[in-house]
Image (cartoon, rainbow, N blue to C red; front, side):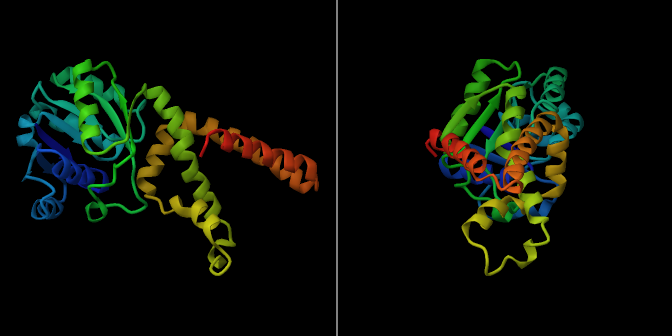
Length: 276
Protein backbone atom coordinates (compact mmCIF):
# COMPACT_ATOMS: atom_id res chain seq x y z
CA UNK A 1 0.00 0.00 0.00
CA UNK A 2 0.91 3.65 -0.33
CA UNK A 3 0.66 5.18 3.14
CA UNK A 4 0.74 8.95 3.58
CA UNK A 5 1.75 10.28 6.99
CA UNK A 6 0.68 13.89 7.53
CA UNK A 7 2.79 15.50 10.25
CA UNK A 8 6.21 14.08 11.10
CA UNK A 9 6.47 14.73 14.82
CA UNK A 10 6.96 11.97 17.37
CA UNK A 11 3.71 10.18 16.45
CA UNK A 12 3.94 10.58 12.68
CA UNK A 13 7.68 9.98 12.63
CA UNK A 14 7.27 6.79 14.65
CA UNK A 15 4.56 5.58 12.27
CA UNK A 16 6.93 6.18 9.36
CA UNK A 17 9.84 4.37 10.97
CA UNK A 18 7.73 1.43 12.16
CA UNK A 19 6.02 0.98 8.79
CA UNK A 20 9.38 1.09 6.99
CA UNK A 21 10.95 -1.36 9.42
CA UNK A 22 8.17 -3.92 9.73
CA UNK A 23 6.29 -3.78 6.40
CA UNK A 24 6.88 -3.38 2.68
CA UNK A 25 4.48 -0.46 2.33
CA UNK A 26 5.52 2.71 0.48
CA UNK A 27 5.62 5.68 2.88
CA UNK A 28 4.87 9.23 1.78
CA UNK A 29 5.77 11.92 4.30
CA UNK A 30 4.09 15.32 4.42
CA UNK A 31 5.22 17.98 6.86
CA UNK A 32 4.69 21.72 7.18
CA UNK A 33 8.41 22.28 7.78
CA UNK A 34 10.12 20.91 4.68
CA UNK A 35 13.48 20.44 6.41
CA UNK A 36 11.93 17.80 8.67
CA UNK A 37 10.55 15.90 5.67
CA UNK A 38 13.98 16.05 4.05
CA UNK A 39 15.53 14.69 7.24
CA UNK A 40 13.02 11.83 7.28
CA UNK A 41 13.84 11.03 3.66
CA UNK A 42 17.59 11.13 4.31
CA UNK A 43 17.20 8.77 7.28
CA UNK A 44 15.10 6.32 5.27
CA UNK A 45 11.98 6.86 7.37
CA UNK A 46 9.97 7.75 4.25
CA UNK A 47 10.20 6.83 0.58
CA UNK A 48 9.19 10.20 -0.76
CA UNK A 49 8.21 13.69 0.29
CA UNK A 50 4.59 14.31 -0.53
CA UNK A 51 2.41 17.36 -0.94
CA UNK A 52 -1.29 18.01 -1.01
CA UNK A 53 -1.33 17.40 -4.74
CA UNK A 54 0.20 13.90 -4.37
CA UNK A 55 -2.32 12.70 -1.77
CA UNK A 56 -4.43 11.03 -4.43
CA UNK A 57 -2.20 7.98 -4.63
CA UNK A 58 -2.46 7.17 -0.91
CA UNK A 59 -4.31 4.00 0.06
CA UNK A 60 -4.14 4.97 3.73
CA UNK A 61 -3.62 8.44 5.16
CA UNK A 62 -2.70 8.97 8.82
CA UNK A 63 -3.21 12.47 10.21
CA UNK A 64 -0.67 13.12 12.97
CA UNK A 65 -1.46 16.67 14.04
CA UNK A 66 -3.36 18.50 16.77
CA UNK A 67 -7.06 17.52 16.75
CA UNK A 68 -8.53 20.62 15.12
CA UNK A 69 -5.55 20.82 12.76
CA UNK A 70 -6.59 17.40 11.40
CA UNK A 71 -10.01 18.78 10.56
CA UNK A 72 -8.59 21.96 9.05
CA UNK A 73 -6.15 19.97 6.91
CA UNK A 74 -8.93 17.88 5.39
CA UNK A 75 -11.09 20.94 4.81
CA UNK A 76 -8.24 22.46 2.84
CA UNK A 77 -7.00 19.34 1.05
CA UNK A 78 -9.96 16.96 0.87
CA UNK A 79 -10.35 17.67 -2.83
CA UNK A 80 -7.02 15.92 -3.49
CA UNK A 81 -7.94 12.69 -1.66
CA UNK A 82 -9.01 9.73 -3.80
CA UNK A 83 -12.32 8.02 -2.95
CA UNK A 84 -10.52 4.70 -2.35
CA UNK A 85 -8.40 6.21 0.45
CA UNK A 86 -8.86 5.29 4.11
CA UNK A 87 -8.18 8.37 6.24
CA UNK A 88 -7.52 8.07 9.97
CA UNK A 89 -6.44 10.50 12.65
CA UNK A 90 -4.27 9.86 15.70
CA UNK A 91 -5.93 12.32 18.06
CA UNK A 92 -6.37 11.86 21.79
CA UNK A 93 -9.99 13.03 21.61
CA UNK A 94 -12.73 11.71 19.40
CA UNK A 95 -16.20 13.16 20.09
CA UNK A 96 -15.11 16.67 19.13
CA UNK A 97 -13.57 15.79 15.76
CA UNK A 98 -14.93 12.45 14.50
CA UNK A 99 -18.30 13.91 13.43
CA UNK A 100 -16.49 16.67 11.52
CA UNK A 101 -14.12 14.25 9.80
CA UNK A 102 -16.94 11.82 9.00
CA UNK A 103 -18.89 14.67 7.39
CA UNK A 104 -15.84 15.65 5.34
CA UNK A 105 -15.42 12.01 4.28
CA UNK A 106 -18.98 12.00 2.97
CA UNK A 107 -18.40 15.31 1.20
CA UNK A 108 -15.21 14.21 -0.57
CA UNK A 109 -16.01 10.51 -0.95
CA UNK A 110 -13.20 8.88 1.04
CA UNK A 111 -13.53 6.62 4.11
CA UNK A 112 -12.79 7.93 7.59
CA UNK A 113 -11.93 5.68 10.53
CA UNK A 114 -10.90 7.24 13.83
CA UNK A 115 -7.88 5.85 15.67
CA UNK A 116 -5.61 6.64 18.59
CA UNK A 117 -2.19 5.05 19.22
CA UNK A 118 -1.76 4.80 22.99
CA UNK A 119 1.92 5.66 23.10
CA UNK A 120 4.17 8.68 23.35
CA UNK A 121 6.97 10.38 25.21
CA UNK A 122 7.45 13.53 27.23
CA UNK A 123 9.46 15.00 24.33
CA UNK A 124 8.19 15.95 20.90
CA UNK A 125 9.44 16.11 17.34
CA UNK A 126 10.80 13.83 14.65
CA UNK A 127 14.18 13.56 16.39
CA UNK A 128 12.68 11.56 19.28
CA UNK A 129 10.46 9.35 17.10
CA UNK A 130 11.36 5.66 16.90
CA UNK A 131 10.27 2.48 15.17
CA UNK A 132 9.70 0.72 18.49
CA UNK A 133 7.43 3.35 20.07
CA UNK A 134 4.30 1.30 19.45
CA UNK A 135 5.61 -2.14 20.44
CA UNK A 136 3.09 -3.70 22.81
CA UNK A 137 0.91 -0.58 23.00
CA UNK A 138 -2.84 -0.37 22.46
CA UNK A 139 -4.35 0.92 19.21
CA UNK A 140 -7.87 2.25 19.66
CA UNK A 141 -10.22 2.35 16.67
CA UNK A 142 -13.47 4.31 16.49
CA UNK A 143 -15.10 3.12 13.24
CA UNK A 144 -17.52 6.08 13.05
CA UNK A 145 -19.72 4.21 10.58
CA UNK A 146 -16.90 2.97 8.34
CA UNK A 147 -17.14 -0.42 6.65
CA UNK A 148 -15.63 -3.49 8.28
CA UNK A 149 -13.03 -3.94 5.54
CA UNK A 150 -11.57 -0.48 6.14
CA UNK A 151 -11.47 -1.07 9.89
CA UNK A 152 -9.68 -4.37 9.30
CA UNK A 153 -7.08 -2.69 7.06
CA UNK A 154 -6.16 -0.33 9.90
CA UNK A 155 -6.23 -3.09 12.50
CA UNK A 156 -3.86 -5.25 10.45
CA UNK A 157 -1.49 -2.33 9.88
CA UNK A 158 -1.44 -1.69 13.63
CA UNK A 159 -0.65 -5.32 14.35
CA UNK A 160 2.04 -5.42 11.66
CA UNK A 161 3.97 -2.53 13.23
CA UNK A 162 3.87 -3.97 16.72
CA UNK A 163 0.80 -2.80 18.59
CA UNK A 164 -0.03 -5.37 21.24
CA UNK A 165 -3.78 -4.77 21.32
CA UNK A 166 -6.34 -3.38 18.90
CA UNK A 167 -9.53 -2.26 20.63
CA UNK A 168 -12.72 -1.16 18.89
CA UNK A 169 -14.67 1.51 20.75
CA UNK A 170 -16.97 4.49 20.29
CA UNK A 171 -15.93 8.15 20.42
CA UNK A 172 -17.91 8.57 23.64
CA UNK A 173 -16.36 5.59 25.43
CA UNK A 174 -12.93 6.56 24.12
CA UNK A 175 -13.17 10.07 25.56
CA UNK A 176 -14.61 8.90 28.87
CA UNK A 177 -11.83 6.37 29.44
CA UNK A 178 -9.03 8.60 28.12
CA UNK A 179 -10.14 11.29 30.57
CA UNK A 180 -9.25 8.81 33.33
CA UNK A 181 -6.26 6.93 31.94
CA UNK A 182 -4.43 9.78 30.22
CA UNK A 183 -5.76 13.27 30.84
CA UNK A 184 -6.30 13.04 34.60
CA UNK A 185 -2.71 11.86 35.27
CA UNK A 186 -1.40 14.84 33.30
CA UNK A 187 -3.54 17.23 35.35
CA UNK A 188 -2.32 15.56 38.54
CA UNK A 189 1.33 15.78 37.53
CA UNK A 190 1.03 19.47 36.69
CA UNK A 191 -0.76 20.25 39.95
CA UNK A 192 1.85 18.27 41.88
CA UNK A 193 4.89 20.13 40.53
CA UNK A 194 3.22 23.51 41.07
CA UNK A 195 3.91 23.03 44.78
CA UNK A 196 6.49 25.55 46.08
CA UNK A 197 8.36 22.54 47.47
CA UNK A 198 9.10 21.17 43.99
CA UNK A 199 12.20 23.26 43.18
CA UNK A 200 13.83 21.94 46.36
CA UNK A 201 13.23 18.23 45.74
CA UNK A 202 16.80 17.34 44.72
CA UNK A 203 18.37 15.04 47.27
CA UNK A 204 15.03 14.24 48.86
CA UNK A 205 13.31 12.47 45.97
CA UNK A 206 13.37 9.02 44.44
CA UNK A 207 10.99 6.83 42.46
CA UNK A 208 7.76 8.24 43.88
CA UNK A 209 8.61 11.78 42.80
CA UNK A 210 9.73 10.63 39.34
CA UNK A 211 6.59 8.55 38.80
CA UNK A 212 4.20 11.26 39.96
CA UNK A 213 5.85 14.13 38.08
CA UNK A 214 6.97 12.47 34.83
CA UNK A 215 4.13 13.61 32.58
CA UNK A 216 4.22 17.19 33.87
CA UNK A 217 6.78 17.73 31.09
CA UNK A 218 3.84 18.58 28.88
CA UNK A 219 3.14 20.17 25.51
CA UNK A 220 0.87 22.92 26.83
CA UNK A 221 -0.60 23.88 23.46
CA UNK A 222 -1.62 20.33 22.61
CA UNK A 223 -2.83 19.29 26.04
CA UNK A 224 -4.85 22.44 26.70
CA UNK A 225 -6.74 21.64 23.48
CA UNK A 226 -7.23 18.02 24.54
CA UNK A 227 -8.45 18.99 28.02
CA UNK A 228 -10.91 21.63 26.85
CA UNK A 229 -12.32 19.62 23.96
CA UNK A 230 -12.96 16.76 26.41
CA UNK A 231 -13.88 18.89 29.41
CA UNK A 232 -17.12 17.04 30.20
CA UNK A 233 -15.56 13.62 30.89
CA UNK A 234 -12.45 15.23 32.37
CA UNK A 235 -14.47 17.37 34.79
CA UNK A 236 -16.36 14.26 35.91
CA UNK A 237 -13.05 12.55 36.72
CA UNK A 238 -11.73 15.66 38.47
CA UNK A 239 -14.88 15.83 40.62
CA UNK A 240 -14.44 12.17 41.59
CA UNK A 241 -10.78 12.79 42.39
CA UNK A 242 -11.65 15.85 44.44
CA UNK A 243 -14.09 13.80 46.52
CA UNK A 244 -11.47 11.14 47.18
CA UNK A 245 -8.80 13.73 47.99
CA UNK A 246 -11.21 15.44 50.40
CA UNK A 247 -11.82 12.15 52.23
CA UNK A 248 -8.08 11.61 52.62
CA UNK A 249 -7.48 15.25 53.58
CA UNK A 250 -10.15 15.12 56.28
CA UNK A 251 -8.82 11.88 57.75
CA UNK A 252 -5.30 13.34 57.96
CA UNK A 253 -6.56 16.69 59.30
CA UNK A 254 -8.63 14.96 61.98
CA UNK A 255 -5.79 12.61 62.96
CA UNK A 256 -8.20 9.75 62.25
CA UNK A 257 -5.80 6.89 61.78
CA UNK A 258 -8.48 4.21 61.51
CA UNK A 259 -10.36 6.00 58.73
CA UNK A 260 -7.14 6.91 56.95
CA UNK A 261 -5.98 3.29 57.03
CA UNK A 262 -9.35 2.19 55.65
CA UNK A 263 -9.05 4.59 52.73
CA UNK A 264 -5.49 3.52 51.97
CA UNK A 265 -6.47 -0.13 52.17
CA UNK A 266 -9.40 0.53 49.84
CA UNK A 267 -7.02 1.97 47.25
CA UNK A 268 -4.63 -0.95 47.73
CA UNK A 269 -7.42 -3.49 47.17
CA UNK A 270 -8.55 -1.81 43.95
CA UNK A 271 -5.02 -1.79 42.56
CA UNK A 272 -4.26 -5.35 43.68
CA UNK A 273 -7.48 -6.66 42.13
CA UNK A 274 -6.29 -5.36 38.76
CA UNK A 275 -3.22 -7.56 38.99
CA UNK A 276 -0.91 -4.66 38.20
